[in-house]
Image 1 (cartoon, rainbow, N blue to C red):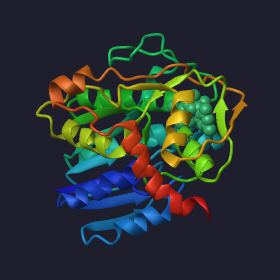
Image 2: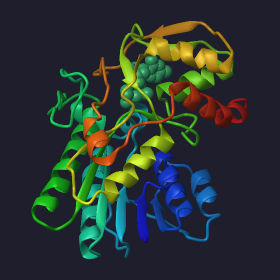
Image 3: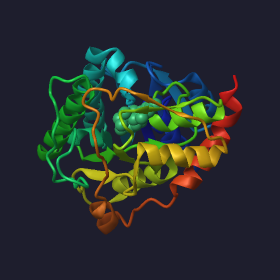
Length: 310
Ligand code: UDP
């Protein structure tokens, strides 16, 4: 099958493309390097089935494929807040153009949605039916509301019978090939520990997240696409919840370096708790994460260690 992966130079786009190529498919990778890295594309270009198209998804495009996987969007808070108007354009126009391309070629579509749909949730853990608690004028809104509108147009294309658009709500994911300057907690803590620096904990470190290893997530993507019917939004993430202080300890244990904790102010609208309810994915896709945090941190550390001293 021929797949288009938008955001192929990004963390998830890279891993999805690599998995599809390993499975024998052809992949067109699209990116404009707004937040992705050329090294990811160079690694993918080693496969004969890969073709790269440098393109900005806010501009319409035409690619004849069987499946469109729309992953293009900066996803780390410091990156998506740097140019919030452009982030909102990518989320909306990028998804619209992906849907239009899918419709033109009668392709199925996979939309990378996000747990940010739930905002700072008042229900815990979050099932797909929870409608969320999002601040529409806060600094995270360009991403959160952009991704919510992206879900809306996917659902409308679906309702109108124009595209079979499948929605995955991605919770915190980590693994090799994340950008070193991603600014997210797993990469920050691992690099800080590897460099013998203090770990920067925002707030008092009691806020929680659940961390899914990237290979588990990609398997979830493929199961959502392969499902005989469109299940509506599907949460994909690891339901084991950790506070940021617990994560700091797990990182120190993995790296073998106990460095001090440096407390910093909690960013505005930073969700206090986040944990997926994955009952839907379990029941309909027989999917659940298989890689424990310690093992995932071990694999990610193996990737980051040689890069951390540069
Ligand atoms: N965080 C932290 N130290 C860091 C980076 C992030 O304590 O160096 C916190 C952040 O405030 C949030 C959690 O870790 O509560 C996860 O942040 P991240 O940016 O990784 O992802 P988010 O889930 O907020 O999109």
